[in-house]
Amino acid sequence: MDASQDNVFKVGDKAVYPAQGVAEVISIDEKDIAGSRQMFYVLRILDTDRKIMVPVVNATAVGLRQVISEAEIREIFDILQERTIAIDTQTWNRRYRGFMDKIKTGSIYDVAEVLRDLYRLKANKQLSFGERRMLDTARSLIVKEISVAREKTEEDVKDEIEAIFFSN
Image (cartoon, rainbow, N blue to C red; front, side, top):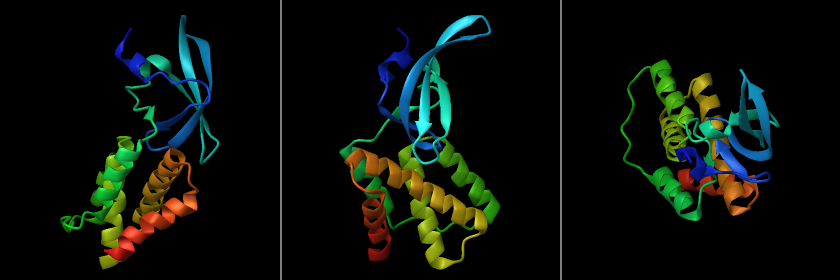
């Protein structure tokens, strides 16, 4: 078997798709693409109800991964509580591109850094429209995944995250 087989999902499993968030595997279909048969995960993004098809053999390559564990959630909270971040003097559009690149990696830790950095920046100056949207996106990705992982409401998780920034 190839390396992607260590990340096998079943129908009903929750998975995380980079920059889209938590999805549910609603089926595993076999399709004929360019003369070769391939298996696809059919995912429904929980936030948007959007459907995405991911080739099973490429699942790891595109960044499809399991929902985070409690230990990983604690690491995320450590990242969010980090206070010694460098003050960014780049222009907002260069900063925006850097943040977007981090969100696209699919790493929950990168998304947590974006959320933390934008919250810290917001405390010192007004965010651009794009940065405000990115803050909302990063918050939404983290809140959704932690709420699914902990089986808590999104509101409870959001309150827990907000408390970190108000206490610092």
